[in-house]
Amino acid sequence: MMLKIPALLSEADLKDCRKILDQAAWEDGRTTAGHLAVNVKSNLQLPIDSPAAHQLGNLVLDRLGRCPLFIASVLPLRVLPPRFNRYQGGGAYGNHIDNALFRMPGGDDYVRTDISCTLFLNEPDEYEGGELVVEDSYGDHRVKLPAGDMVIYPGTSLHHVTPVSKGARLASFFWVQSLVPSEIQRRTLFDLDSAIQRLIADHPDHASINPLTGVYHNLLRQWSVT
Image (cartoon, rainbow, N blue to C red; front, side, top):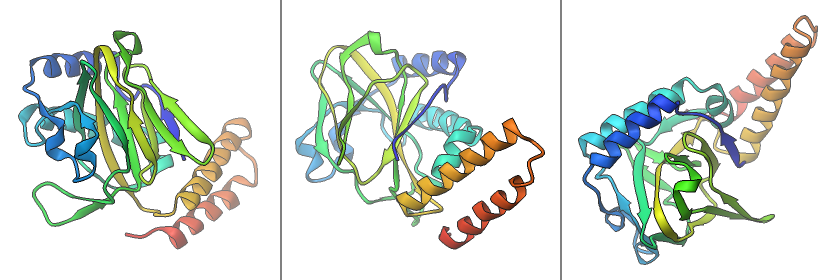
């Protein structure tokens, strides 16, 4: 499932992020690329263990925890600490698939990359190019969202970032391991939950609300892996 999550960050959040990013020390993004991706990756990243990355990552995690749409669509079990990148001067990232597993910082636990996330941190008119292109059986999906908006998509997707020919593209990217590994089952639960929420809004006393909610939770019990 590919889904836009609007306004994850507020204008005040974005202002704070930009101030930190403008003062941050960046490094070559190829330092975190896999053995194949390193050949097609050309961007800058904040060092994973830098104070700026920790501060901004904690802000993003806090906002994710307050976002019902993110929680309902992703059903998060583990979230890898957010990372931050910058594309400029023709920087791009060629076609690749993200690693299946990432180790959590400071521990032995791994995050399985069920869902990939890209959070845009500056406005589309501040740079040319820089579209996230996600490929699936229905074709290419080109994404370039307003600052503060995020897109989620399956971690199994082949995707790339087009060259940034003018300005700079700033974004956060990270991965989520879901309580429900199956993309089809997650989509089923999300559709069911969305239908229940619409029913509650339109007919708050409807007799079907409790039974349908029970179906949702019983499916979650069967499909979740902890």
